[in-house]
Length: 236
Length: 236
DNA sequence: GCAATAGTGTCTTTGAGACAGTATTGA
DNA sequence: TCAATACTGTCTCAAAGACACTATTGC
Image (tube, rainbow over all chains, first blue to last red; front, side):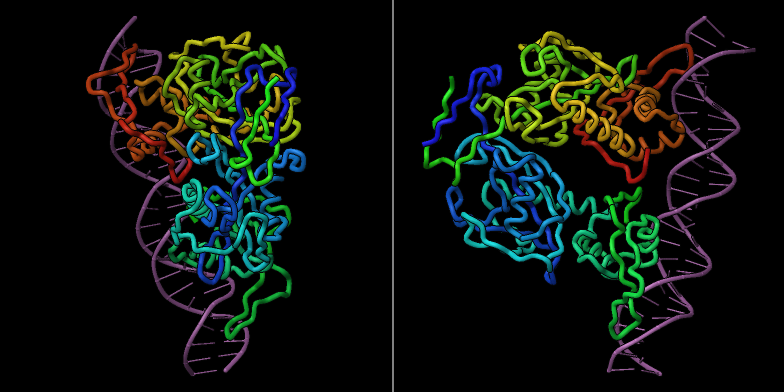
């Protein structure tokens, strides 16, 4: 039994019971299969044995801020330290969690799937990549969160440099174009694509390094140091 | 003294103290002065007598969801029922509130300033419109939230139909263009502007109604029923 | 040589922006 | 008549998109 004593001086003007607060992550990765999302199977009630987005409670003593909490969850499940992480939205109502009025701050992350070592955390019996359209029923309202994240990703892909974060550190322009095409589900014109990338000026060639195959070798690029996501004023 | 007993069965797997949760609103209105934001002067500690964004705690028993909580705050301060309301972001850390680890779900609202009847709520000694650039020091990190909201508004104005919500129900195209110009701080070409508005097809003329002055009368428009904000693929 | 992909150049067509015109009122 | 603003039409120039061409490797 836990009992929190709220001191009267520091208490809110009127004291209300607080909602439950958790941080949930939609972690996208690009594998041979296509765009996939990292899911975990819940070990404990509610929704035991159901697949869910990785998440957890805020550790008031440990997490200095919200993003730290999200990064802690991310590192715990993937072992990855610095991927692209963005706040998606906060969803909260009385019905989403049988334990009571509950709040979820949803984040979405993009990672290069090859760097990941999947880990099983406490209360999770399994962790796995699942194709984004494999619309399995997820715990809580996580399916709705996943759909929001997917919408946001597809929108941003249309007019930003965001998809680089799905690639390893070094990549070719052909690989970059392929990422855009796989997420958008349509072919892009190579010439127009390269014009956009050149204008945005966010990747730099790695001198001397080429990707070799049984064709003309391709220049290898990396993201320019200190790159922030760039938004085009037109569609890619 | 308040003591919450958390039953062991329904408790989180590991039980952590919960953060403080509030909902704060950046409410924009367009007055003769220009773009203004609705502020209230706090009546109670912390930050007593300091200006702050209107906000409040979630009422677990009363609010069915987050947006309801935001609308309750909005109605309480302005008497306005259905303005444009959008979730901005959630900010949370250990330092922003002296009472402890605190979370603020920030919303931003656009209202037609003429419909508003300002009200003083509990714990507020004053409620007033303030120009957005009058960078008074605000309570908590509300200045940062206000800046976020302003950035979001200016960005969206560039390529969306969002500014209609700052106008009364009936307006002329000249008035609409003026709203865009006042927020963006630059003149727009009338011809190009009207082309955009016509393409977006989100306003309809009110048959027969004209705004009269000592010049050619202007057609009065209203927003098309069921209008959702439309995003242009280019700048306005 | 051939297959395959890298990388570049050019042409056409679209449409955004600039600007100037006409329309219609009150005074 | 003039002043003022509503509303529309046209021209120009930039750039997006389509497409084709050349380059360079392994086999």
